[in-house]
Length: 333
Image (cartoon, rainbow, N blue to C red; front, side, top):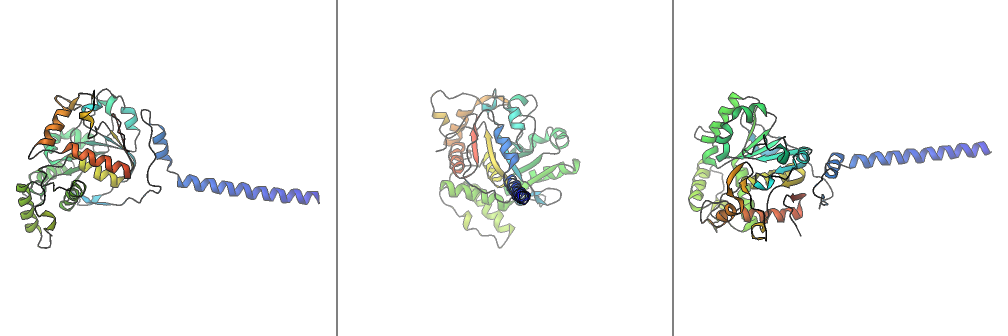
């Protein structure tokens, strides 16, 4: 009898062990270990708890088309590091931390060589304004050959990005992929550009397009398709602004990343704060002061970027999405 009881106890214990083992496997399957490890490695800032509990499925990004293959962008990242081009990055010495992220994003032609200690070495996604494409083409071997694993996402207005032979920037990019067939160059579609404009309207209550460009957009839309609705391009309150590369970067990153850590971007009140740090507009260019540039653009009646307005919107997004800002730190209440 004692042997029988002992045998039953062993069987029950075995079932319990097996159950616990299966439970642990289930928990490990549900936890995003790469993200957790990346967050734990953050040395200069505490990772804030995310607002949502479930990771949404990430799909193909149809608003971004490869110049050579005409295929849409495939991009899926865990923890993204978006590195600002601001002079705030100088002296921060967070390069190693940045390079541990799942995906490292940079903007326009911001270099890493010579600045690795502060901004890191790796670049996986580079979002580029149409006006900065000639700067990339000054050193095409570096941007499109040596770093051919980098994904380039180019944004710009229809007049520069049109594919009928009259888009001056698109022609440059098409020639670049002929010379560097391994280059991963994507362009933002006209529909996606309209979406980004629409987000600005929704968040600020103002149309992004100034009157002259509005007329061009209406004409281009009418020529492009008889089915194109012009309702979204009718004049409303005009902001006289051009969206920044940071705006397009954040919008794509929110679709492609599970969590976002933005380095070196100031908030909308920084330039009014006591004892703020005076730095160059770009960490790789001496001269222009960042706050002077922000205030100049914010108050320009026409043709400026609304950097300060955009930062207000970014702070709003950070309350709903998995976004944190450091160097300097943002307080998002």
